Image 1 (cartoon, rainbow, N blue to C red):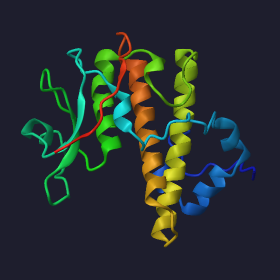
Image 2: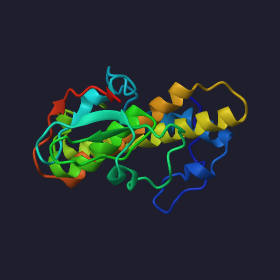
Image 3: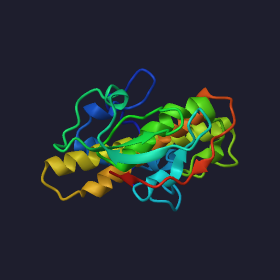
Length: 214
């Protein structure tokens, strides 16, 4: 790898690079540097593909019951969670809902996104154990070790996401699933950090809930 020690491209006061302000050349220089290689604890996130059967990793509802991943027209209380309307014309979307208490997550056109949003929403209520997160090999780590690993993973993924988007804008064939997988891992990293830092309650079980197609 290329050693870029001494270069300090557009950093926050904390020392973190402002990724959104970097050029593609600068991003690729960081990704290929010895310093970044040493700081990135792992790119082995586990055997599970975050785009495959995401409903298998749903956290239980705060009421204690099993949620369901639906594909249908989202109810009004789910639509109110959106910052902007869904773009799909038929009005259907994926969303997680609890048939027992009626709690719902944010709708999405991607099943994995709906699951991640639900888990982030419920993590502070019923998480608290690193074993609840099926990615990043966090089991057995201390809280500080897990936080350090997750922060290094998030930074590496964010750089690779920016690199892929810039290459796509230049006309390169990046692949939609490649970008989706990066986004899914970033989402799970945020869930893991929330599990780690915001709730002292026991970890949720992983439940097996398959999509129900309307």
